[in-house]
Amino acid sequence: MHEPLDLWRAAWVALALWRVEHGEARWVPVHPQDPRPGTFGGRADLHARPPEAPAFLPVYVPPVPPLGIEAHNLRLWRHDARAFVRGLGYGERQLMEAYLGKGKPSTLVSYNPSAGRLQTHAPLDLLDLFVRLARRAEVDTPPPPGVE
Image 1 (cartoon, rainbow, N blue to C red):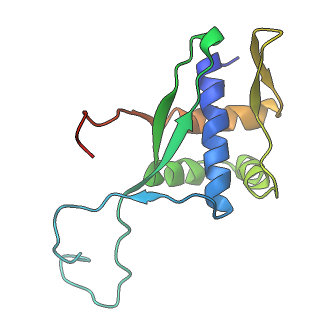
Image 2 (image 1 turned 60 degrees about the vertical axis):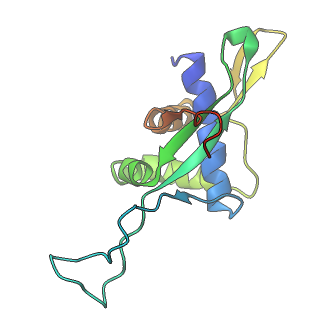
């Protein structure tokens, strides 16, 4: 089984992706410092679709003090998420699409204070899928004070 931190992160990554799918959140583009136009095949191509700027999905992971989980932020890079989905088998992709396509987000994991542990509310294959995806996210360190 997975560690509590992995399960907790997976639940919040799943919710963040559900929010993107339903138009409630967006990928945050990271604009390159180089203002030159993009090239395709070594030459400027005015008819080609411009390459997408790198982008990430900010994911807030709330604290669970009894389990030693502190609040933190993750960055899930769009190219990592897309590569992950491309690498899924047909059944796994259907499972992910079914979750993301729901009209309301379902909680994958919650903290049960009376039991002092996380309680799962989703099939293990769905949990495993989002744990694997959440492991691709990086912990986002906040900027130093005074820097935006």
